[in-house]
Amino acid sequence: MLEGILSVLGAVLLLASRLNREFREELGVRNGVAEIRTQERSVARRFYVFRGKLQVARGCHPSPDFAMVYRDVPTALSILREGTEEAALKAISEGSLRFEGDMAFGMWFMELLKRAGAFLKKPGSLISP
Image (cartoon, rainbow, N blue to C red):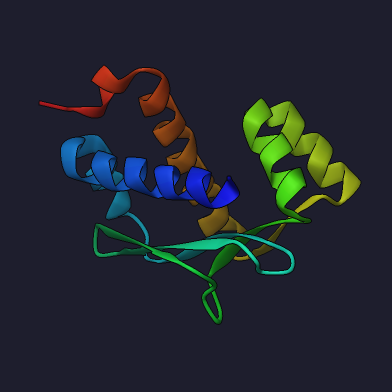
């Protein structure tokens, strides 16, 4: 289930990068590799952002610039299903979710994820003139 959620997230990010000019321009601001994974690395998705382009792949990167690490699959599913900042903050305080690497890049990447979530809620906002 988590693998499917991360796959859909990657597809939405790719779609946004192709259809939304503002999103595409934002991708040009930074370069790096972000990763979302479980602590034991059983489920992972990596996101390459270089020169305004986005690529998504399964599996772990040997040294991502930023990693969002969930304790395990049930924890990740619980947090992602709830989909609120409060759930994420609670998980962070409990040690169920942690961040590794370049936090400036990570905050930027998490903003991209928020925008992708907004596209899912309001698909018409995905396409820009």
